[in-house]
Length: 144
Ligand code: DAT
Ligand code: MG
Image 1 (cartoon, rainbow, N blue to C red):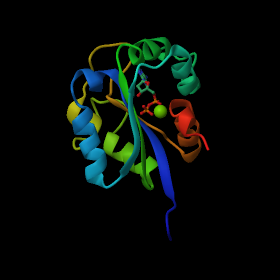
Image 2: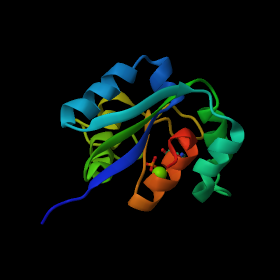
Image 3: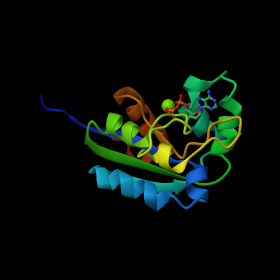
Image 4: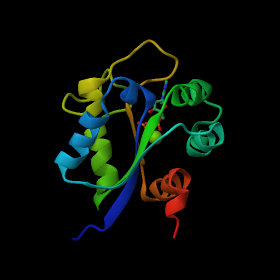
């Protein structure tokens, strides 16, 4: 069976930028063999983050999540490759960095900081549908 080439949206969150982990995170994506096809550092508007995180509206960590994501610059990227959506989530590790597998970005480099929202360094799209939607939100200039 052949796997189609996918694209996924990856974010280095403000904690990753502040801790100077952009290079480390990009290295892991490239070492795994995925191609970066777009990279930019931005300070996203609230409306952009609300669109991105709409599935979490109403949850107790929603407002802390928006505040955290606006606490400093982030790096937005598009990575490409066969099964990259699943593959990046595997190298990112579980949402909760305390139990994320050692060897993963979150497992190796993040931990519970006692904050209302989990600070776990990276975002990766979780399906083909959300990747398309999220790439459109963060890279409207690339719309065909
Ligand atoms: P993921 O980023 O692994 O896809 P998610 O989409 O469920 O996780 O949640 C988005 C972000 O919100 C996540 O990276 C960290 C934060 N978060 C998720 N669940 C949380 C919880 N129960 N308490 C605090 N923060 C949470
Ligand atoms: Mg998610």
